Structure formats: structure tokens, C-alpha cells
Image: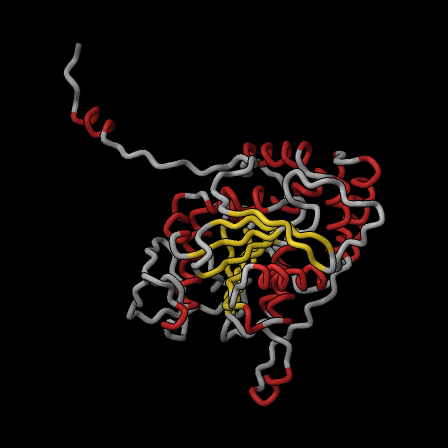
Length: 369
């Protein structure tokens, strides 16, 4: 028998890490699950982490929920340190949670503004003083509406594939057709293809086919088609956020804008990239950042490492968990860290972080990861 080489010895000493969970099954990591009653229906909330920590509220996109949209990302190895300093409250739109029963036929689904109002019920239920919002697609739009209505409760917004405008005629037509198909025939090929496009963009040879296959199976076997059709109807009836960029300081008091820091993100292959560019043009450049993640459409699933780094840096810029280590990506922010927002046991860093503002995210100065 040959003698063991140095490479053999080093291989045996490798410390294994818990792999990222990409299944859509319910995880044991949720500390608490609640069904909260509101004036607009019942809302399922899954809590991850210790509730004495700073709060992060997540909100999912169309066809997804807290498990399929966020579970794999928060089980990513680089997110473990963050979860030691934060408690994550995963909100689900009515009837979108895993295993949800079909909503009654006479149920009037909440509008986007009413879905945003339901967030206040969760804030009061868990006695939250303020939180950081993390939303994707339709969920990002809902969190944005809440932040405009209740700015004092929101420390910052991390929005992926967010749109600030009403649905265009093409989007409205496709989504309306899909909604009708979902109600009458279930998850047929037409709404399935549209959902895959909505999340991944155009499928090419560069796409992650294993991931696309996993979500194809999920949409086909797990999603409640009738409940999803109601959520889609609400989304395509959304109103404009009516935010605007006002450069004249004398007029800023009357403008409708976000008071907290905002980071807009989109994948380079996402069909919603242009929507985020347009929204960025309407934001105050002093407290907003736009970022494009290369080689992906569904950023959190296809590039979790890059998104995790950006999220950590964004939280540091807000003054939270400043000791979290980062690598590979840098953001800058023009205001010092707020010591009063640092969690128990966190040490305040002395460096000054600045956020790079992308004025024209189409030109050569685009911030790309």
C-alpha cells in the first residue's frame, strides 16, 4: 500500500461547512410562526433569530413565499454572522405561504397599498420600534409603499427588482391572461413560462438550468394557482409610487421621497433592470444607491455571495453590525455610523463608510459586481 502523501493529510483536515439549502421544504431554522389577523385578511409571518435583536422584515415576489424566496439565501454560509445580530421577520402576502388553503371565492384581495398597511399590523404584533426592509419584486414595491407612509419605522430599504411605476400595457395584458389561466386551468405552460421569465429573464445557454428546473417543479407542484392569481391581479393594478427627485433645497420639504437609505439592486439578465434604472432616477441621490449584479437574473439565488456582501455593507452604512467582515465588494457612505443603532454586544467601528451614488446607471460608471 503506498504511503500517504502530504496532500492526503491536508485533505483529511478540511473543515466542512453546512451547505446552502436550496430546497423549498420548510426549515427548522424558524423560531416562531404566526398567523396575524388584519382588516384585509390573515398574514403568515415566520420569525428567524432572536427577537431582542435588530429587526429585518422581508417580503417576497410573485409566485414565491418566505421559504422559496429567502430560505436558501439566509442559509448561505456568509449570512450566519449577520443572523447573530439580527432577527428576520418573513412576511407573506395572504394565501401565498407554503400549504396555504385556497382563499374563499368571495374574498377581496388587498390592494398593494392595503398589503403595505398590513405590515403595520406585524410591526405592532411583534412590538417592533423600527426595521430594515428587504424586498424582491412585488414585495419590494410593498415595502417601498410602507416606507413612504411610515418613514419613522424604516431604517433602510434593500430592494431587488423594484418598480415605482404603474404596469405598462404589455405587462398588464400578459399578467391578466396568466391570472385568468391560473384561476380556470391551474399552472399551465403559459403562466409557468411567464413566472420563469419574471424571475430569471430570457433563458439562454448561460442560465443555471438546475435552478430553473427546481423552480419549475416548485411552481408546478407547490404554488396555489388560485391564490397566486389574486396576488397577480393586485400587483398589476398597482399605483405609481409618486416619488420624485427634487434638487432645489427650498422645495424638498414638500416632495414625496424616502427618508431612509435605499439600495436598489437588479441582476444584469433580469427583465426588471430598466424598472430599477427608472426608479433610481426618481430617488434622492444623497441617500440612494443603484447596483447591478452581473451574470444573473435572480440575484439572491444565482449570486448569493455577492448579494450577501452588499447587504452587509448596506447595513454597516446604516450603522448596524459594523464589525461584520466583508470582502470583494465595497460601498461608500457619506455619513458616520449611528452609535445609537448598534446592537447589544456590537463594537462601534471608527471608519467612515460612504455610499457611491450612481447618477446614470447606464453609462460607463455603472457600479457592477
